[in-house]
Image: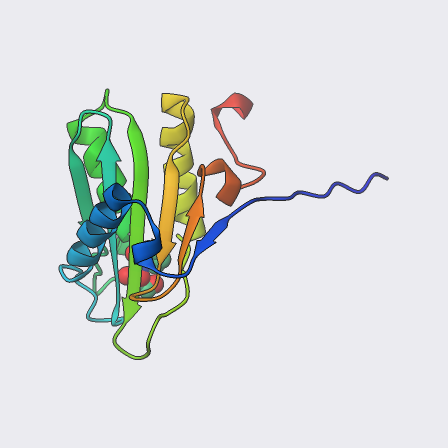
Length: 160
Ligand code: THU
């Protein structure tokens, strides 16, 4: 038996203003997108903004449904739109902001496992890392240099 330890690296910024200007602008798009969330069941709204290498910014928000599993997270709404509209463009970075009507979200809120799996597909497809920035509605911002850092032991096409 052999023990395997897996380490990952994240960078934590005290607030949005500590980030480079272009990242602040992208996060502001994510925050604006959060206001367009349709989340009457969870009261938890998420916005995501992607910067593509063609200069386009794609945004998405979570869209819920009375049949709960039919809803979709903000990150997948955005990345599937980007993939369907700009299939050849590479994704440079993604900014995510999550907020709840029920409580203040001041700590970074990472993308869920299903969204990490979806983003991983595009990172592997384009063969360059996607930077991921995530936060609550205010406060600290976390950065991962790649999706791979957020999803060790990824299930990918290599096993198929
Ligand atoms: N949600 C997202 O949009 N992204 C995530 O990464 C986690 C969860 C949404 C789904 C649902 O509409 C609400 O947040 C509560 O789970």
